[in-house]
Image (cartoon, rainbow, N blue to C red; front, side, top):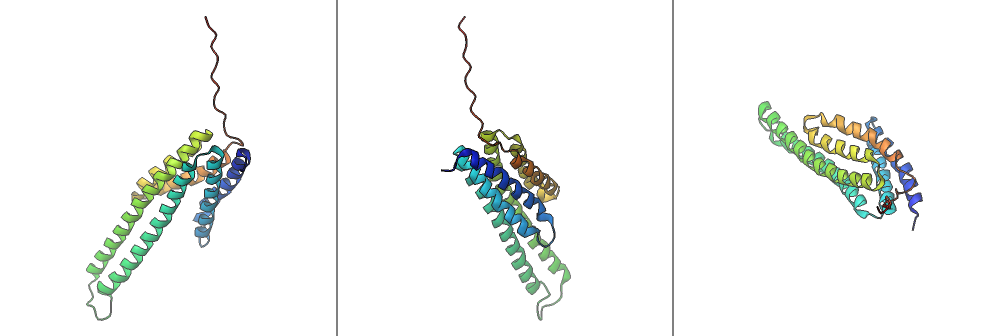
Length: 199
C-alpha cells in the first residue's frame, strides 16, 4: 500500500498540474483536450487523497461529478445537433418544403432552450457531487480552499442559466489550482485531548 505521505505528495503535484490544464481549457482549438487531460489528472489526485485518508467516498463523489459533466455535455450536444437537423428538414428548409422563416426560428429556439435546460440540470447535479467531494477533502485535510472551490462550482452551475455563473466557475477553476497546491505533505493528526488537573 502506498504511504499516505507519498499519496498526498502525488495528489498535490498531479492535482495542481491538472487544475492548471483545466484553466487552459479556454485556449482555442486545443483547450478541450487540455481540459480533459486536466480532469483526468485531478481524478488521479483525488484518488490519491482518498487512499491517504482512507475514504473512498471522496473519489466516488468527484468521479460521479466528472461523469455527469461529460454525459451532460454529450447529451446536450446530441440534442441540439439532432434537434437542429430535424428542425431544418421540417421547418421550411428541407427539399420541397414551403419556406416559413418564423416557424423555423421558433422551432430552432425551442430546441436550443430544451438543450440548454437539460445541460443546466445535469451540471447542477455534477457540481453537487463535486462539492461533496471537495467538502470532504477540506474536512479530512483541513484545506478550506477546497470548500470554497466546491461552493463556487455549485453556485456557478446554478447561475449558469443566466451566464453570470460561468464567471464563478472560472474563479473556481483558478482557485482549484491553489487548493491542490495547498494539500499538506501528510494527513493532519487528530487533536489530542488535554489532560485536566484535578482541583
